[in-house]
Image 1 (cartoon, rainbow, N blue to C red):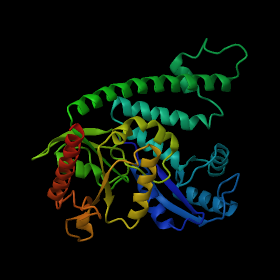
Image 2 (image 1 turned 90 degrees about the vertical axis):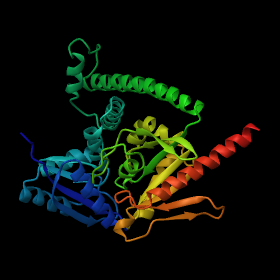
Image 3 (image 1 turned 180 degrees about the horizontal axis):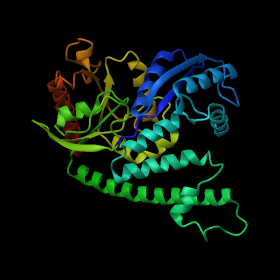
Image 4 (image 1 turned 45 degrees about the vertical axis):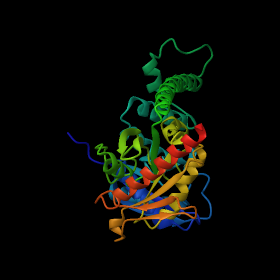
Length: 369
């Protein structure tokens, strides 16, 4: 029997950032990607968050009325809430309240497919929830057997914290082993002189569709945020340049929780060690410049800012633009305009990859002389 989608009230407040409409649209898509049924979006403007309720008392009353009117079981805030604010709001609305970070973590938990992806999501969730540890980690205690675990003089909260800390350490150890395995695979690739390319970009920019168009891999594609979590790699043969390895990676998003960036650092290591990044941009999105900036911000955070990039402006069919290649002042290809959905410009992108690979092989040969 299918479980009906929970009815949700969304709260999106403006603190002077000036991009309220973009943030609203993205948050609605986030909520739907998590499986929520959006009943109403409530917006407002404030100078700063209220320490106790985040929103002002009048706005809280408006949200509470909407919860009752729509019989909603969930209120989602497009902001970071403190544990105290979350508890106070749940008391006011008499239903669950989640902030943006928790919502993104929930989507990641739903989407992780690989063993490593699931470990990384659990680690991110535990590290996020550790800051909110106030009561009742009884599910952790049940997993460990409970009775006999408590040390002398420990309070329930201290026990819960210790159990949580032990689980986090165990997850980190497992992820370290997987990281070492990936490093061995990467060294084998480098010995074989196979060039590595990573697709990066804002979530829902069309990376997986482009990945499929280039490699015929059949990766999962959907019009939702974070459709891809686990890195998928495929070999692609380029005439005159030989084989390259292309990797599809998780999409980036503004205000990505730091625990997620940290937990997914291992997955994103494919990006750090790539020879070239294909930065996929949704050409039809009015906020594309800001999205480019957000992606570059995360690349800087994971230490991948110095890797050469080619910007791939995707979805040109939606803006009735023609496929083309643009070069920088040194004559190097810097932008390619394509439609991964229709296939327009994919041949130009393959040509750009072949040109880059040929130049890289020539550089390597010159260094050996």
